[in-house]
Length: 116
Image 1 (cartoon, rainbow, N blue to C red):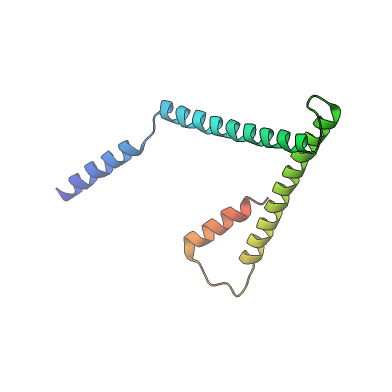
Image 2 (image 1 turned 45 degrees about the vertical axis):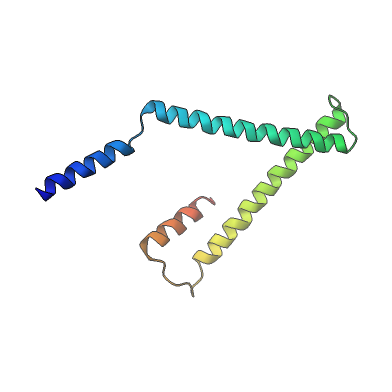
């Protein structure tokens, strides 16, 4: 009897956790919308910064300013990733580090795999 109740409870839990294709699509659409809104905010901020430097929109100098800001942001992102990966590699190779158990090792491995 206990096994039946356990299996029913487990089945209900699994069914309630499952997302339908429509729910997944809706979640993906919301994620894409948020990403687009974030990009638009960055563009608006960059335009404002270039205008504050005295550049006029729809000119070659303004476009160059926008491009340089974008390149600078991408370089900063790449540098942050490199530094994060170096910290992870150093921590994973530290011989004095205490064992973190199975899941700690899995997460460390995943973090380092993201750096390749």
